[in-house]
Length: 179
Image (cartoon, rainbow, N blue to C red):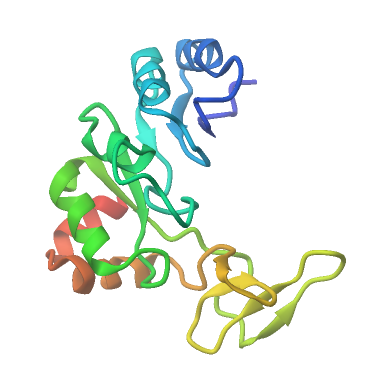
């Protein structure tokens, strides 16, 4: 019992808000992610106890409304921390800098989102209907779909050093965010 510590969910899904309240009351950290939420869904989730944005800026639709949209809403919500993948492929440097400057080092979490294929040589892997491909320059994608990332090809140490280069932060700041 009590082994679940973190849940990521889309707050616009039916019954998400009561679920968030129950999870938070049980000591679980609730994070917003995999979402197409309207601003009111984000606010309801935060009011219910959501504390984090999972992989902010990733998994977003290719085309978003200029504003409002779920990225701006999460970025602007001071009660939400943000986790970001700083592998050099998931987010451009300008987005990494913006998130860190907006949220602050104390409210940003670096994550690597390493796939089980991290460190593997380029090639196509897997059996069955979904195959993954490790590309020459490092990203891991759904085979044949170069724009659909499927986890990171690097581990946390690389994400820490990449964040330094991308955001112009110190080693200590990067380590603190990787925590």
